[in-house]
Image (cartoon, rainbow, N blue to C red; front, side, top):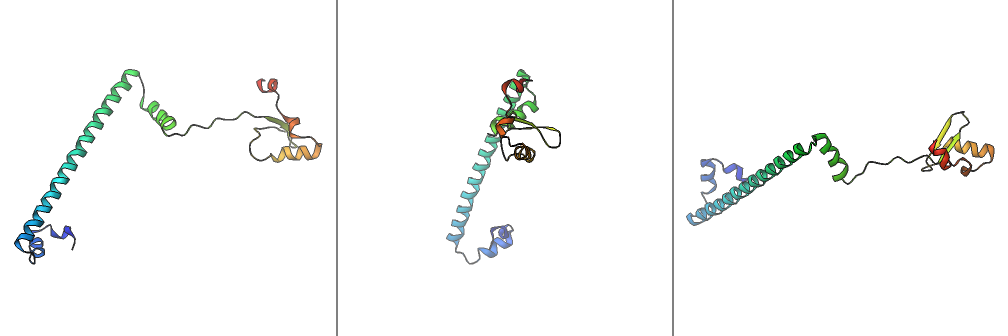
Length: 139
């Protein structure tokens, strides 16, 4: 039998019919102890919520004083507190004009681009021949 079935006087009376007076008293004592524990837990939960609200209010005041917007805080939280950093873009290390006549750049990460592979096969060059020199990168 589920306890939720004992929420009416009639059902509780029926469930306790086979219990002795001392067993019924013990059951009531146990239920009262459980009730007190639940009250204490709820009270502690409310205190924690109140403390959090107070802290958040203080943070909001500090943000207002410092001129920090909610969106700035969200950006900070997303980037700094999540442990994930935005990926930095890598500079291109290789530049070549493909067989299609367009200029392509490659960071050197991942698979060799098809266009560069075609150039190397066709011209007998190496990928080092397409390496961007420092002065080229600044242009």
